[in-house]
Image (cartoon, rainbow, N blue to C red; front, side, top):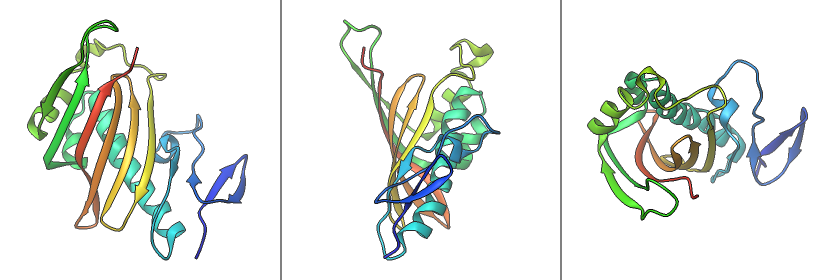
Length: 172
C-alpha cells in the first residue's frame, strides 16, 4: 500500500493524510486544498489527482458566486443538485432553513455579488478541504464568506460534479 504524503516546507513526509500548501503564487484549485484522504489500493495516485479535480469543482462553485460567474456553476454542479442551508440575520436570531436547487444556485451566482455588494476581496475566505475520496464519490468542506458548506460529489463520465450541499452561516 502506498501512503499519501504531506508537503511541509518543500519536504514530503509519509503520513495517513495528504495535504497541499496554500501560498500566494498564481491561484489554482490546489492553492485552496488543505487536506484529503483516500480509500483503495493505490491511495496516493488516486487521491492526488482526484483531490485536485474535486477542489477545482468547488473553486468553480465559490468563485462562480464571488465573481458573478454563473457559467462556473454550470461546469461544476449537477443539474440534480440538492442544497440546503441554515442562516440567521444576527447572533441572537434563530436559524432559518433554506432549500435550493440548481436553477436557484445558478441565478444566485449571477446576482449575489453584483457590483461587489458583498464586499468580496482577495482576503475573502475560500478554504477547501477534500475530506474523503472514493472512485465514484467524494466529500469536501468549503469555508467561504457566507459560511461553511459541506459537499458530496459524484464522478460522472470522468468529471467530478457537486451533487449535494449542506451549509450554515458562520456561528457567531
